[in-house]
Amino acid sequence: MRILPKRFFDEFFLYSSQFVVFFILMLLITPATDSLRPAALLIVVGFLVIQILLLVGQGNKPLLRVLFSFITPAGYALVRTITGSLLPYDMANFFLFAAAFYVGLLQAVALGARSRTVKQLAETLLALGAVLVFVFFYFYLDLHLGLSRRLAAGAISAAKYRAALDLRAFPPAFIAFLESPQNGFVVFGAATFGIMLLVSKVKAVNLRSRMERLFNAIRLDERALPDHTEGQQSVVTVLSADIRDFTGIAERVSADRAVAILNRYYSLWALAADKHAGRVAGIAGDSVLIVFGLLGEKDAAERALACADDFTTALPGLRDDLQSASLPAPQEVSIGIHSGPIVAGELGIQGSRRLGIFGDAVSVAARLDSLCRELKQELIVSQPVFRQLGLDSQARLVRIGEVLLRNSTQPVPVYGRK
Image 1: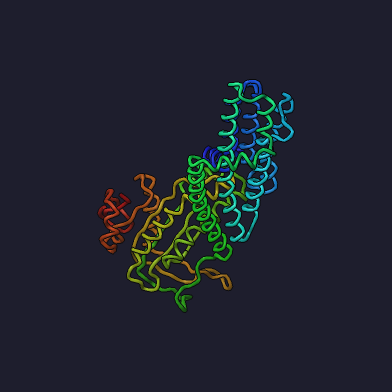
Image 2: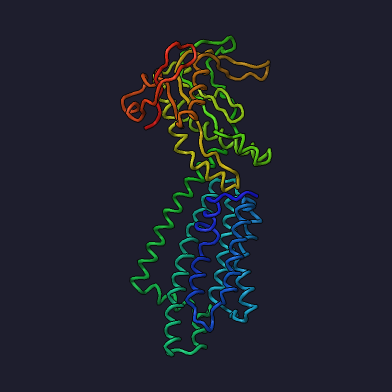
């Protein structure tokens, strides 16, 4: 099982174990008569690490996600029981299990639900849960510190100290906590963080839903010109793209997982192409071919560049989506754009024809795509494309050198992003 570092830290900081961080801090400031020994504390942390590793590797399965969420709470309760320090109605122990159930269940719903509305509701409740977890443990830390000081000063007995940490003492203690202006500010800050987290997650859900919905209906674009069966020559703008080192990614995963990666990748390109009136004219392996201007649009070059920009902007969301499914994500995608003549037609045998293109522009776009690796660029556009762009678009590009392209006897300038 390959562990992705980003996925590990996502699980640790954002999802399953954020409350445990506060809990371990609380253990460290507990009076010596009631604290866990260093060895016991290390055991609790060990349970936490095991939980995260299992969630990273198998957390994309809803039922396992719920079950794995209880590993750390169970480890804490076990250690407390063995050391004889577990209270029957311990406030922290109760909340630890309640938070594990809440977070694990909602994450399972978000993973398994097909409805975008249900996913968004689950993500909303998760963001709310993140706020509540933070607020509770800040409250518990504040309560614990105050009681520890009073116990050390002899102001309260050990029996009263334990009674104040009982679950039945929670309502009055929490009301007193909220009455403090300082604590009210902390609650406001936590709520603001929760809103930011919610916005980020809803955007990811929307992107994922759009990708899945589009891919379920995707096929090579058939919105070609009427009577394309005999072929037609056109001057268009062609975008060619592929994933760098996809072979290395595919070798590390099973065949069905490699297909899942490509399907999400295709869907993201299809979304960007559809937005800018481009037509997906070919997909093979990790290579995608999109054509702009088949209907004679004058701004084909602008549309192609905008499509590439939109894909690049959405690529981090695709990486997050893949990593949430425990799939390796493509880190770099090469894009080449060229304008020139092509022949378009419905290619294939009777009953299974699809729009296909071939010609000089296709070959040059593919050549620019491959040059991205040599020139250390993620996007390269040819001079014919650059000349068709508006001043704003040209200002975002920079000349990166000259290359010898197909059917040219002299090196020609090419451009990349600044």
